[in-house]
Image (cartoon, rainbow, N blue to C red; front, side, top):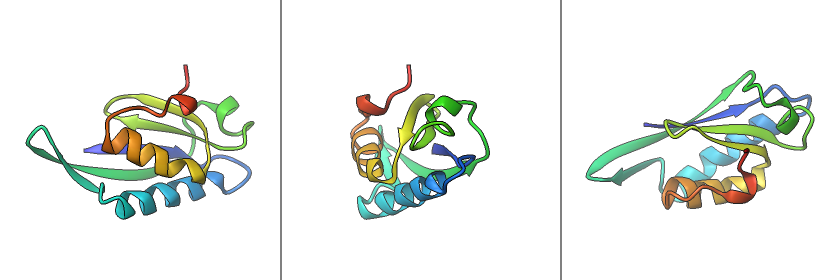
Amino acid sequence: MIHLFVCNAQKTEVGKDVARALKIELKKQGLKSLFAGGQKHKTRVQTCSCLDQCKHCKKGAGAAVVVYPEGIWYGDVKPKDAADIVRDHIGEGHPVKRLLLE
C-alpha cells in the first residue's frame, strides 16, 4: 500500500484541498489501485494534523506531503500540483523534483 499523508494544520484549507485534489487525480488517472512488480498496490490519501514541516506548510502557501513507504517529502504543495504527483510519482515512480524537500 502507498500512503500520501497531507498536513492540514494550516490556517487556510489548503491541506484539505490538496488531499481532495490528490484523491480526484488518483481516480481520474486510474491509479487508486495499480499493478507493479506483479503485485497490486492500493494508494490512500490521508490528512493528518502536523508533519513537523511548518516552514513548508503553515508558513508557506501550500501543504507538506509525505509518501510512504518511500519517505519522499514534498513541500508547499498546492491542489494544482496533485496531477504531477499522481502521474509522475505514483504512476511512473519519479518524484516531482520541484516540490521535493531536502
